[in-house]
Image (cartoon, rainbow, N blue to C red; front, side, top):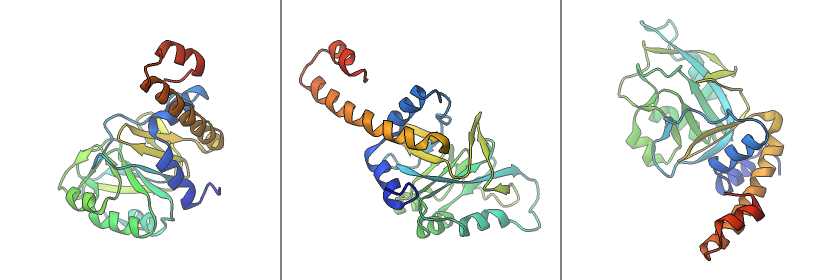
Amino acid sequence: MNKFSTEYYANIEEKLYSAVIADVLDNLGYMNQVLRYDIRPLFPEAKMAGRASTMATVEVHAVPKEPFKLELQLLDEIKPGNIVVCATQGSTKAALWGELLSTSAQAKGGRGVLIDGLSRDAAKIIEMRFPVFALGLSPADSRGRLDVVTIHEPVKIGDITVNDGDLIMADLDGCVVIPQAIEDQAIAKAFEKVSAENIVRDLLSQGASIQKVFQEYGVL
């Protein structure tokens, strides 16, 4: 399967989950790929897998000469399978994301948004069932408060670097970044682990000893 296809992302989204990918990354020696725990989905069923399309903001104290310039450029450049990753350095000054941006991203085949800041228009976004993961909500507009200064460049969320094109997996448990260098290996091992977990789940549901099952399968 082409790993840049919509089918590839949909398959990951349907069959994998953030915890199994985090476990696999740990086993591969990448133990710092889970983003901060307080980036939460706007609705519990939100789940997304896709490629990071990155932008970074700074706080401002006046309306820039060309407000929203880079932000709108990034949105016009969204390709099917992209997840918009917005790094605000944890700013809670205003909402960088909202309903109209979600509408545009969804129409272009975007699979969701991840922001270490705030969103707004939550009711409308939830109605759209468009996955948005954020620190929280605010009605305050970003105009004159936040401005996008880079797009398609590496960004930092906490102490984790997200590169444009990295694979993102996010669900109710949280958000995981899979570096491109190990993506093929990590995804293959994640499918293997899910298969083993399905066997273990069946055995445990039948009352098998969890100690013996762990000794045999090494999966919890």
